[in-house]
Image (cartoon, one colour):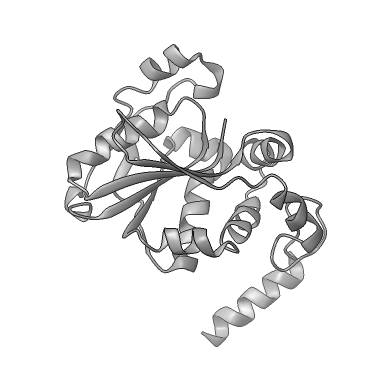
Length: 218
């Protein structure tokens, strides 16, 4: 424990944490001024979903303005550290913190090995793992996986996305889902085709419930 503490302290001295919005050094990855700014965009919602393989869509922001800029910076500009900015902002809200605690397991939408190698990280996985650690629930990346690489969903129309994402995911260790309350995490919800396909596959494990959480809804 002491060795880990010292290691973390040394890393923070060499590579100090910065606010993901303005870039100022800040141990919480979000300075008070920028936290106040993000609160202006906050619109926490839990939407009941019909005709889908999940029950509720939960999101914090709408995909616009500075939120859109931050997500694009996080996802495509090699700014992996931004996961801490998002998570630290999310979990300061007691209602959100308590909501996350109602689940047994968090699972992130997987990306292909090729995409992971190109980007260096799975943006949804980093956020999901950090939430699981801070809320003290299980994170499992050994259930849902991507079996083939596809054209990026963001480049396609709604109809094309639905077809593009079919049969892209598979499942293993299904018993780890049985009778569990599952939260599937992704970064953005646009048409919902990606999370719907993931949830369709996850239902093979007979979970008690599946909800979806995204940082922003388009």
